[in-house]
Length: 147
Image (cartoon, rainbow, N blue to C red; front, side):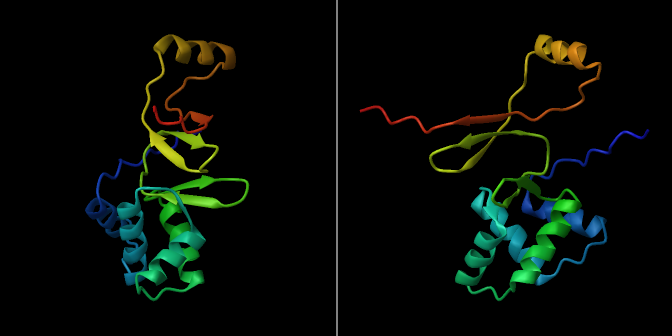
């Protein structure tokens, strides 16, 4: 069985454009609008939120175009797609990272953490697998600001 290929992380909007071109994806005006919005927003958005924000900015783009472009970009690992029970959310980070799910604001916050090596070994021993990457989902509430 082949191991999955891990795409090189994309660190800028320009690199996202370059990845599209390298994959022979047409860099349409609508696709550029979506990538620009995700890189500017730096948060996870639903297709509806992306559609609404783009149209509020005066970018003419249809619902279908938004959905098709989001699917194409996430299928090619140019953007992230997070499956939620109520919607798919899209973000600009394409490499492996973890999330903090804020239960009161419903925000997803990207975090980069490294688990201790002994914890990774423990998971490997319990499952009989070799861990090559991981994602951790944390859940919690915003801490009230100190008075």
